[in-house]
Length: 86
Image (cartoon, rainbow, N blue to C red; front, side, top):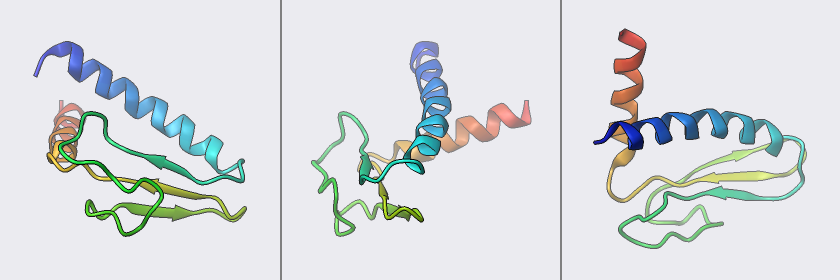
């Protein structure tokens, strides 16, 4: 993995935390889907084959967080743990 890809992923984590806070204030449903994944996702469905996590907020909004079919979350988790240990 190149440093550029790693930097983009780290920056997307920061962006994600800000986006998640904004969703709490909105009344719509949102989904987070991995880009360039191996298979298409059923975006606003708990029945997607990737077993998405669904967060429900007090205002009725739902956030569907899809997992990738290529397993990239495992790599991102290892990078995060390595960064914290350094």
